[in-house]
Amino acid sequence: MGRRRRRRRVDPADAARALPEAIAALSQTLPAGPSPETFRRAKFDRPEAAPAFWRLLFCVLSPQLPDGASASFSPEAQVRSVKLALRTQGYPRRALAQLPDDGSQGGRELLLALAWLLAREPLPERLLAQNRVQLGDEMHVCECEALASPGPPAPSVEADGCVDIRHLQWLMGKLRFRWRNLMASQQEQCALLGKIHSYTRGCHSDRSLGHLSVTETELLRDPEGGRQLLRRLQRENARLQAALEWRRRELVFWQWMDTVLDACPPEASQPTFLPRIPTPAAGALEPLVRELQALQGELREAVEARRAAWEAGVGGRGPEWSAARTALREAVGQDLAALRRACERGGSLAQPHGPRRLVRTEAGAPRGPGLRAPEVIEALRSREARLEVVLRRLQGQCRQELARLVGALPGLVWILPPGR
Image 1: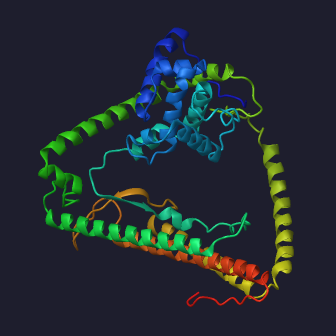
Image 2: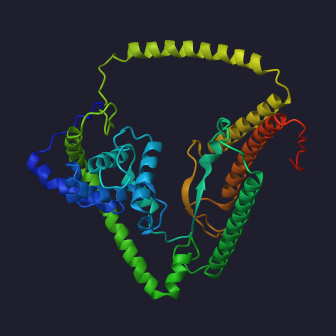
Image 3: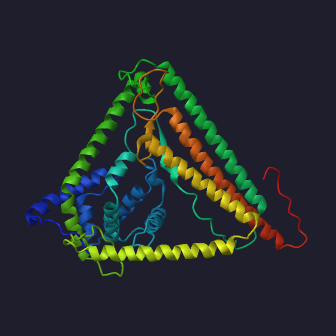
């Protein structure tokens, strides 16, 4: 295992008292969080602790599931989902992938996996943000996606057997039908939200908002819903207090995890929870900086030589190469336009990200918090242009692949569909 961060030592008696409190605070911030006793049993790899941790990791790694939906999945399905999610995120320990799929073993390995997730991101804060109680009508806006490049072309994958074109056409039709249903439902939802915002104009105490949300309107219609909302807010407040308590006692948990890791059998690649970053002495980095600058110069020269050779090799490939260069030039232009808008808007590259409250404002009214509709429309149009570039590139790749397949069948005439 890699080096661990040097931490301030805590008195063993104080740590013994603080550890259950730290684990209890952590469990309260997690969905289906086990008790401190279950954590203790997992340290000693007791089999009775494994099901609770499999269920916990399944809920943590599947945050979009509604409350209680994990019960509809079998233990085997939960175990396979957890293994796949951890492998996708780069979890380094192979011992977890070798655990049986019945969910009866692996308490200690699952405890290490949970600690790995806690070390690589602020997991309690992310879960609290995803499961927070929404009082206003919100929509998710992510303008930073406009800066994402289309990415390299997808690799060609050979089919194992014959491909039924009619089945593919049926799947495409089914996908278009569901997409149209989704768009229609979203348009209907927006129309209903507009009516509610228009009918309740002037009813809100906050003048920057001016109207009620769906949740606030429901409170006027059903007082019992207000009591349920109050209970949900109280539970969320308790989770927030537990998250603050967890951050205050987090050090004790990580010191306890050191003892858990020491009890594990050695493995070639073990997770590094909190790597120690040594403080360099004065002047110790200067030789390293000079060496890195020299390597950077050599790398730049090698890249220029490789680029010149590559352009000389692919420069005469005909219209396909010209179309690819045109698509790439358009993609770079979209990136530059997004960067210019970001700099003009705020002087930084920070893009609006996350949920934003929908507020209906009249002309000349004071601007409230959040984004305005023209800004959201501009972001969506920019994203649409980016997706059009990607679509044209993928369509060109499909045409080339179809031409290759048709060329392998003598006597077959390929006629392009209209509009393609």
